Length: 200
Image (cartoon, rainbow, N blue to C red):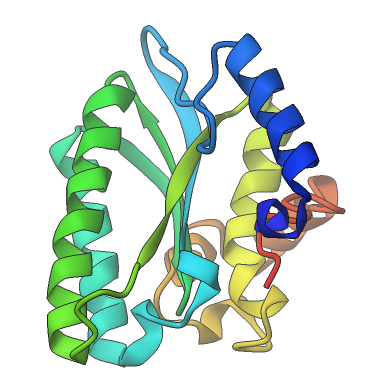
């Protein structure tokens, strides 16, 4: 995610020329236009993966509450989420991704101002943009569910999904049961899903 800093001036110029030629945003992931109901995984990270969301349990809970409220405000169906100390993932279905993107952007602006004031770090950058990926298939969807619920384990915060308080894993386990959840995990393995998304 942060390879840009490691590039030479020539390499950066080449990447920018390619992106400009394709009509994409120069530095940010492209936000494509969609019509009708579409399912997306949305991922946002703190700048340089600093543990800013995770300063306290209260902040983690507030971030989770705000993100879920934004999804409800957009009339988005929420399938899975996980809020970690330095990034978050949500899996949603909506017919108004443009509105959802705008609301997330506004939340990032509000939270950055508030958290910087709270932490007495006025010039600190909080967020490193966010991206949304469209689900391409049923397999992609269920692998995304598994990836999101496994994220707290992947990053070493807990040993089991249900031990992480700031995700939909507990609800998912209660709804589907242990046997069905294990079947979904085995049938739709995450393999290298999300590789390089969370590079520190």
